[in-house]
Length: 106
Image (cartoon, rainbow, N blue to C red; front, top):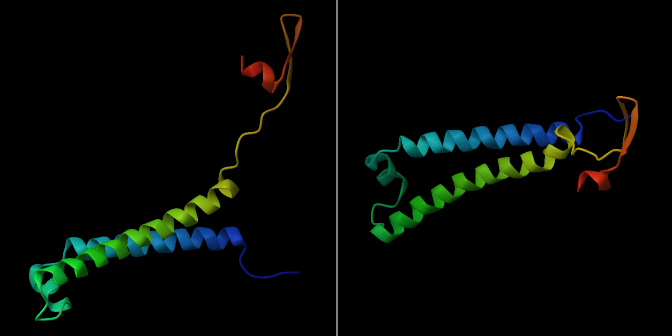
């Protein structure tokens, strides 16, 4: 008998983890002052280098959100199964009705 977590449990944990890491990174970016930002880049960095550093940080944060999105997409079919079409046999007011998925497309 296998022990440990199921693949679905791992996908859901990864989704929650990357979502939280992304939220933390976004909060850090939102509260970043110019002085704190300047302390993270080289003192002799050009404005272009500073921009590239900031852009890379934002892209990293967006990548964390994408990782959460990917895990959510992977887990969704197991958490929210797709609806299946069925045949319906009904009796309404003494009349037998047989409805198939093909009839529903009319």
